[in-house]
Image (cartoon, rainbow, N blue to C red; front, side, top):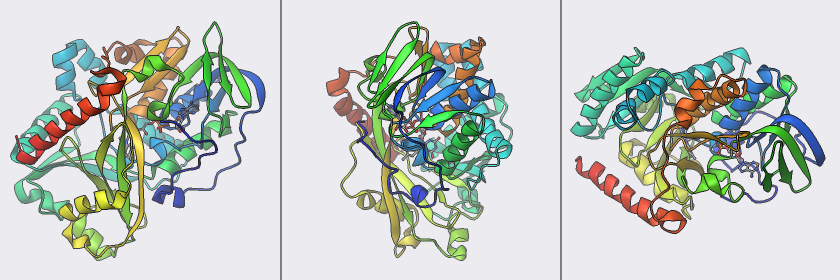
Length: 430
Ligand SMILES: Cc1cc2nc3c(=O)[nH]c(=O)nc-3n(C[C@H](O)[C@H](O)[C@H](O)COP(=O)(O)OP(=O)(O)OC[C@H]3O[C@@H](n4cnc5c(N)ncnc54)[C@H](O)[C@@H]3O)c2cc1C
């Protein structure tokens, strides 16, 4: 995704309610540092903060603003684990890999909570998230999901079978749900802004409006921006779906996808209690899933839809509002105040891509739709590997990742065809 010069945050509910931030001038001139991080989303800022806590001198280069990408515009749902579950990981990559990844499946969630508590970040944190089954097959899947996560230590799950889900969701659409009481939701832009401020409080430097245009590899790595350069001993690439054109090695094995969100006007408390009585976040179990929750000021924030290749629909509300009304016809008269979209990065096996290029350029990307927790874990693992404790980072880095079939030209139509197939299966309940 190319980012226009001087790009600002997308006009979202989050940008409208973001905490004030200091001036972070663009990089001018040539500087040196120990570690340079490219991209100020959750991955980049989590890595930068962990590294600064280890006492390293870190500079972050951000093409636009802190939280400009997916991290500042997502559904805000704290969903545990990965976009592929440990049973699939075990079947494909063996019990050892599944155990290693399973042991970390709930850690990203804990890191977020530690950050919020430790640095007193005000970001509207609320407890609990739900996976809602649209058909019997999905409910069976949730039962297995619960058993699997319990094996890896999550004891805060509750399966609501049949009508019991109505305790949590005032919709006719479902046949059951799984509650994860350890999940939650929050204002993601204020979280990443708070983490950036924490990083700066430890002496870290962030340059906004400083896109990296070229990476010159070597014993030290030089990153060139429009008005300067950073030469660093080690680099973290954290551009995810918005990285374009500077590291083709990473681009062929992933695909940017767009997804869209709307928010209603603030709703009366009685209506809010009817729709989501305990104020949890919800996502359904469809391949092309809907996800929703209430904001701190009582708006329903509703997301869904996927565009392969990351092209935005012309009228976002026209695409997402009918989905919202299918779930909650009670909202027919609710005004839509905000509509925006953002890009996440999909990989073919839907597992994140961690690794390094030339020994000193580290990367973590491709959380395939569930990245709020895993991006936080990624930052911690990058800090670990840089201090010589690479075992946990290598467990991810060892996962094989194939290029999308059809290469760059055909990956969008082929993936759209695959998505159509899965969406049809969801509709028919296969
Ligand atoms: C609409 C939407 C809803 C989502 N909802 C959820 C959810 O509810 N729960 C969940 O778990 N996940 C969700 N996700 C996924 C999640 O938001 C992402 O996986 C996660 O935020 C990725 O973080 P990141 O830091 O890797 O990437 P990003 O947040 O995209 O950050 C990348 C940053 O790199 C910068 N950059 C790129 N190229 C350069 C360059 N050349 N030079 C300098 N800077 C550069 C960009 O400007 C950007 O700020 C959603 C994603 C979207 C788009």
